[in-house]
Image (cartoon, rainbow, N blue to C red):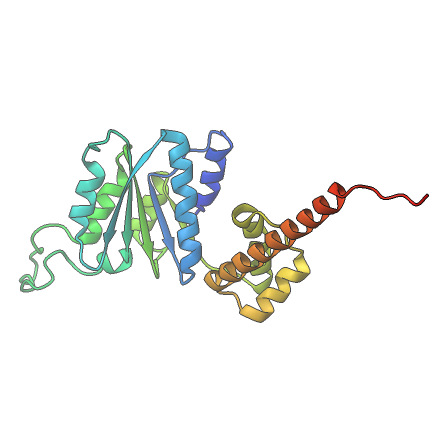
Length: 235
């Protein structure tokens, strides 16, 4: 099983001593939650380092060696590096020279595989960078997974376990991002109407927040207008 780096991010945000991971894996079908967790970690790193330099690579067209060179090289801006790899599961499939002939029996293929290169890095990740691997799927039985956790890294499956979890997420998201409050019953009704897709739920939350703020502003304006009118008396 993997640990949640979002927990580490919250520790950092409150000034507690739990260290942030130098490697974090985010995987699952809930893309919105992956992006939210990435933002959590970035915010914690900014708090810890003052600033971060962000690099984004697509694992479908980038070799691990390129990504790891980026992690190991010094930042020109002299800040902490935040290196994100999309489709990391695709990047780690096969060998670096997949199109080369198979080795003869008893002979090892020249060089290290993509996964072996990543395993070497996971044993001792660079302290000047945080590597985020974002993927659709992730095997928790591999050596890479174990090495990431052993070196202080974190792995988090980004999914909602139930409709109840989606309703709880709505309440938290409404306060943290949209600055409004929503009752649990209303959050549950929203899940019933929209489903558990966080992207769709957040879009509806934004509409509700705008409506609520507009209504509150109109009510405040009406109250102000009433209070500013001169009092009338009957003689």
